[in-house]
Length: 67
Image 1 (cartoon, rainbow, N blue to C red):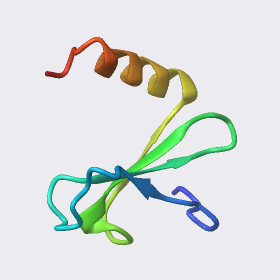
Image 2 (cartoon, helix red, strand yellow; image 1 turned 90 degrees about the vertical axis):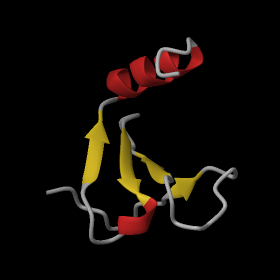
Image 3 (tube, rainbow, N blue to C red; image 1 turned 180 degrees about the vertical axis):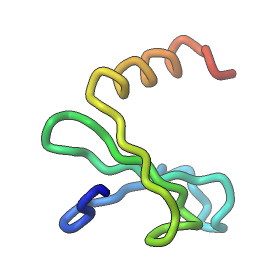
């Protein structure tokens, strides 16, 4: 179980707030990230990524691997 006390979540400024298709991300002190679905905030699952996993994901996004 992940301790979510003190976690500061943020979502994309492109999110229109309608609750559809948005995720929130929180930074961890070790460089990792937490990710959750905005519409399930507080009740849904939270995914945890290590710093290296997150860096690989961001690199893939920048290279268009998920288009």
